[in-house]
Image (cartoon, rainbow, N blue to C red):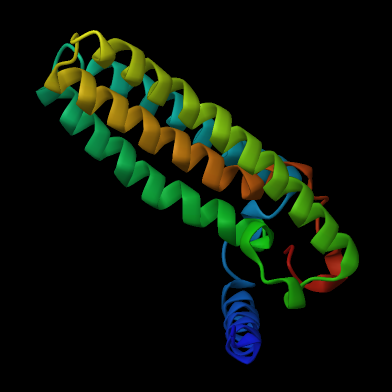
Length: 180
């Protein structure tokens, strides 16, 4: 029999931890919390994902050069992604008890879109790998390229709810103390 008490305790812990983190980060990156700044961060992250796709495809021909480019893209991702999360209030991965009804509806809608994006984006490179390797035409470069494309697809799908919410969220109210 399932112990729902454990699930509820975990949800309560997640909510407490989320609210604590939200308080701690609420004063960081103040100038980037406006809609134009958030949208700029979203566009930069989307451009980074496009670069990661191009780098993944280039690994088929030159795995060494693409390796270093992929490390650079990963470093950029480690800077951009937390910035987008901070300025968007981490609404895309917030626990349900930390959100009001409207925020919960927006989050669930964005997550639904994110799941669809993940399924489509990951299906394409997986299907290509299946069809190419089923005829015996596989190579280590192809496997590496396909793996990077699937990882990129999962990153795109996993981050898309927060990107959607960061793009669509209105500017915070000045009395909230978020804007200088």
